[in-house]
Length: 300
Image (cartoon, rainbow, N blue to C red):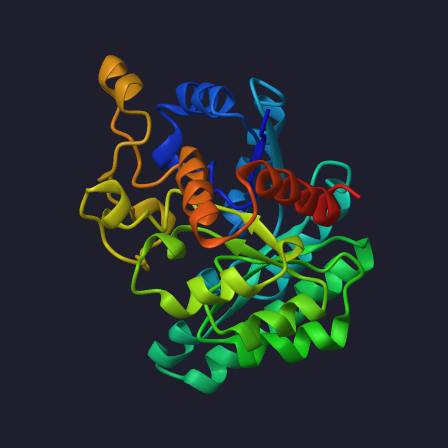
């Protein structure tokens, strides 16, 4: 039987709270046996860690990661990086990666002081890559209009376990540069948008050994081309601001009068099915190799 892992899901988001037991049960029924949950800021470190402990193999496995996302740096300083370092040391037996970390070019461009914003993002990114190096952990990397800014850091650190370029969008040349450094690329809702031709063609050409599946739920909903439901394309809202616009576990939600979030880990199945139309491998071969890729990054 094919098994699946959602390599990037913000399952601690409050959008999931009311229906979490039902959602995890549905994931188990769909053979989604693992969900990897990255932290985004100091105020959700404990939530991510506790979520994994509370639902350990009940009914699926949840694996936490700790990191600080570039969207949430406005009020943060070096004391928060020290807190992260302390939490990583304390939780070394529980976490499987440093993430979600990265550099976001769109945030830099919109900033009142772009050079200062870039410098701060680079400082946080550098610290967290160094932390991953110290603890021999992989990283989960956020990018947006920032491949050129991220690559020099990855080349400098040459992490032993590399990690995942989350929600990859870009050219084959950009993808190949990451793959050559040992990174896997997160395949998610982008491939459900027919206009994302460059990324789809890139995913088609890459070695299967470089890909993993992800949803980024509750953000990054699937295209209405595959859902039939109109939702914002590539939303930039914070996770806690996402609109409840798509049905995830429709019948369970109806039964319990629960409003489902805009995206959920069950959509891994739709993403996988679309990937089978892009790639030439059989569904069984795809599923098997995708799981081996997860094992290589996080569990080897």
